[in-house]
Amino acid sequence: DGAIHRKKGEFGVTENGVEGGLIYALSAPLRDGIARGGEVALSLDLAPGREEARLAEALARPRGKESMANAMRKRTGIGGVKAGLLRELAPDALRDPAVLARAIKNLPLRLLAPRPLEEAISSAGGVMFEALDQHLMARAVPGLFCAGEMLDWEAPTGGYLLTACFATGRSAGLGARAWLAMRQ
Image (cartoon, rainbow, N blue to C red; front, side, top):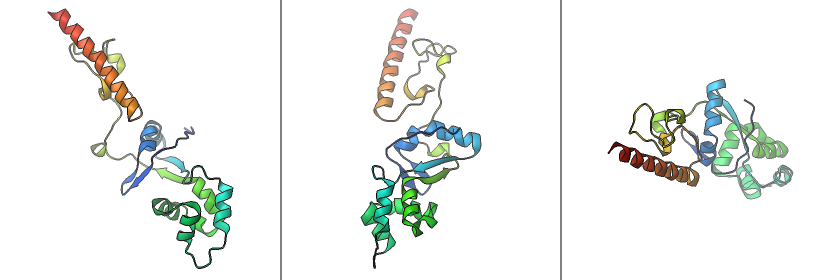
């Protein structure tokens, strides 16, 4: 939808695609964008904290007998997977230091589809809050209480998610205890 999200964090490249904290944090807009338009565009900054002009200056220095890969690694810290991404996604940029610096700071990456649900370590969706009472009991199934990732909400992984799971678990547990007490 044209929204811009700027985030720093872990971004991993695997044989099947991309993953990591950044992808998890943006999973909802990425998923929705792919569903809407068939793909989404990401822009990667492979050298956060480094200015484009400084990168271009470093890359423009004569390299002598040094290979482009070694020069780039020594002068910009770009090697390994990052260098592979540049070669794959912006091969023409390797010819011009200014264009290469721009690609390092703004590398376009298209995402075409999420991985299959069978491979998911986390998923969105769950029981909608409207289907629950104030104690997180299912209105349609009295005695069934829902908490944590059973609920239809998306949250960042890690501490926030754990805290929310504990909090909703406590609330559902207290609700279950009160419900059982009323039935006796």
